[in-house]
Image (cartoon, rainbow over all chains, first blue to last red; front, side):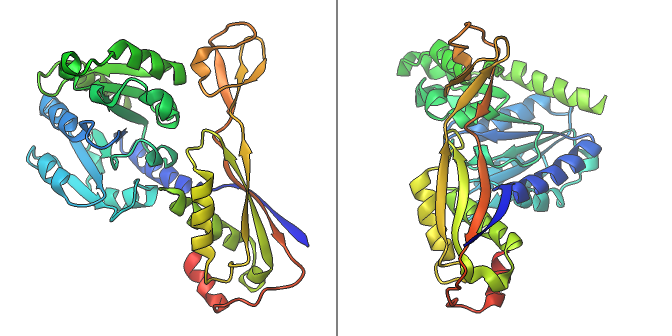
Length: 219
Length: 130
């Protein structure tokens, strides 16, 4: 019996593609976010509101990841934003190589902000770096305030938490302060926003924060 | 669910370190999985056996070592087991703590037997996996 020592990260290949993506994006001055959440938390609607708010001020591009259909890409395309749909055909997360293919179909030189909307899943996408500047995790108030504790990996790796659908708070007995407390327990550095795509509450604050990050990149 | 993707990566990585001609000697693949790595051990084991079945790697078994989640206090240097670093240091109460273990996802080593299990597929089929 002999032993071959390997001692490598399982995801080193994905990480290498992610590093290539990051390099290409940063070099062209693109600020990139990877939006993650469970299905139905409101990522696409939030993205639509964000695009509408930033219209004209910034040039956005979108990569949509879904298990099936290009419904989300159709929604985003209505805003006149360049969008590439990745259909994973059952895959539960996006991988850096898929995103690299998508990037080749976008004009990055004219893009200020790239939004990668990941597959709706609060578990698997946490492991796969795509080359983004930061992860934005969206949690709707209907999902329960225990989710940051139950799915800590995603909240630990995210830099921003958007608590969405806050207009529903009175109807679902949601405790937003408990969501905040639990999220900060697993990640004290989280930047937290509260939004409602229905009433528009909080959209401006979030969108302008995003614009400021992108502005810093462009200098 | 992403355990299948991880299992494929693990087998591909073994393929990059063990010459295809010796694939039949691989008996064990040792991996280190952190408690907070978001990996379900049973699922990874199941996916690994599915990936190697009917390939030159089919004699290989996945051996997992779980790494407990651990944090280190940046103020008093105490190390302590935790799944929630925000809860602070149990020794001095400081909130300046950093996760040191628990997110590992590593392939450590493979064990090669002296004898070879005759592969049920041609060695060049390995190329497709690597």
